[in-house]
Length: 399
Image (cartoon, rainbow, N blue to C red; front, side):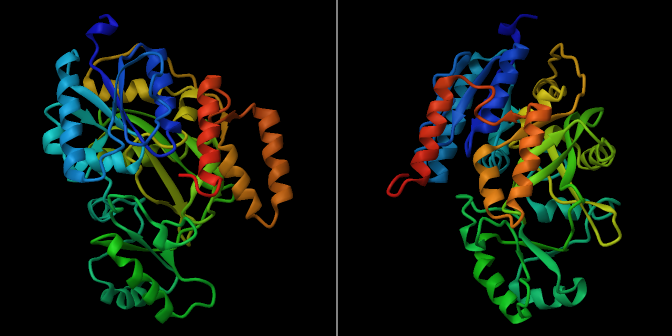
């Protein structure tokens, strides 16, 4: 089968676009034809060599207009593709589009999702309700009314974490303060004050989930990256050694290919909800030291390129699971590291032991030749556009 006989992979590129670029490089290496839906202005993937088609949908603020434009482009591309498209969301807004409009999407394309769940794993309330009997699932309560918070605190304890079950369409969580994705009791804060903060944040989501606070492993948040379908999953373990913000933030120094202990429970969880595609499955520890599922990222995660670099071709494996078309690949797992330079610097600046952290990070980079996101494996043109974007973000008066 030639590349012209392959169904297209479609990347929904938004957010930082780091995972979108990693997927594009992976598809290019594997001989998979690919196109891009741009969900942010001045996408770094516009004009990238090898891209069969690019549709800029960044200007659609109205969800109805975005829906119409997305279906229009997928319909046109499906007519040019050798089979049903395989869509790869790279951030939660793109994944929300695919799941929210799945009845219109599925005749044209398949995408990474838990087929047993209406929102594919994106809705935390739906996810943890479905996994209530799973041994690795955290004890969870679903709330649809802030008046129930006090009773949940009585049941689960004051050290309870509250999360919006489904992020808003605009993905704006600024009301949660300091880049966090959760609401939990601050040191010395009264229960009354916590309830007031929750009431202010409640409009973010129709439902919230409450869970006892989990803690990190000694070396950071651990988990597994998995690709495939219930009949066949392939996975690799990872550890996030540095995050920003520390609580509820994003990994900025990550290692993969080491301890695989969490791969099996991750695969078991995915099989229970009939997951197909690729996913990040992170875990934290409960009070007894038992690994508990933190969430499910049913999309290409920020460090998806690290899985590829560590020897697991998650892009090609997920493409096979979504289209049925096998791509010749080899998996040879070897430890590898990844660093998001800008976010790592922010994390170290906020860390009281920043000197120690900087020394550790420098040693890891020298020892493991860590991949530097947007600097190690992209063209100089992409680097220049990335730096211009960073400058435009931090300089006053710029968007």
